[in-house]
Image 1 (cartoon, rainbow, N blue to C red):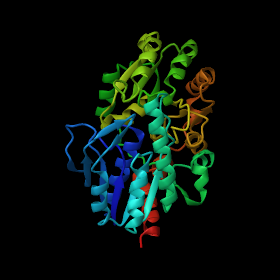
Image 2 (tube, rainbow, N blue to C red):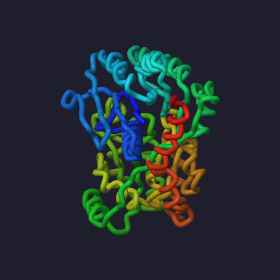
Image 3 (cartoon, one colour):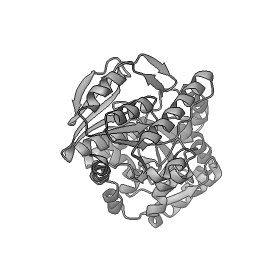
Image 4 (cartoon, rainbow, N blue to C red):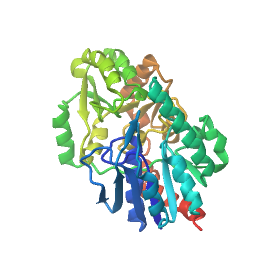
Length: 382
């Protein structure tokens, strides 16, 4: 099967969407399919074309940047060329180019599969407002043209103002999990990097430092946690400097985090070999997301597959991993007090939230998710 995948950003850009797309592409290649990714050359130093783990990645030059999106003048001509050779076109939304790409696909008689990751919410301002309107219009046009719309959970689809209009096209497929086994060397490297000492209670958070992640509520929860667990500290995994569009948010958080001193440590992005070690060293991980820009939270499943329970916001989609596994607590969003109480509960009674990590790893494995996508693609090809 020849699959053309289009999305605004691909690796090495680091976000939940790009990780999802990369894992799925690799898993489809491993199952014998040909995958071409058409994306932006958002950094000048990136190669225009390269083979990454069997995936043919083609990057187009950026002519204009609009908020967090980009305009690629060469997108439509290149897409037209590649679509003629493809069996199916797979679009990841939100994406400014989605509407014309979906239209080209249908003109060529190619089935269109959309993966709708989350709603787009941009900061205030005229440029952001324009980008938001254009993206919303692109979503409606592409969804109308699509054969099927994949989303992480039925829960998110039914509660989304956008997706609820297309419930007849919805196919829930959860995101793919890909996590290396934690070796002793990786564990020791992580402990040395983070300065983990015996007796510390580690609270993990893995995310870009972005407004929708609700980082400030974990900061506000920590004084209450420290009253009961004085050795507790947060290890924050993920990009925290120069996050595109989040500079003001980082400046706002900086003095709040400084007050926690040694109880908060930024790790940045870790090598893949240390990811499982990170989750295993945590007693609990936290996902205090605020709104529908978070539709699931793959890091929850990664944490659970390592046997570490999670505290997550009670949001459509985001609450599903805890509901499915029983491995954690669900709390109201934007409630630092409830967050602190749930963290303390898990730190006090960790054994009650262990669940079945092997079952989690099997259900969400990249191979399993690729197989489910494969069935969707086959259904509409021809």
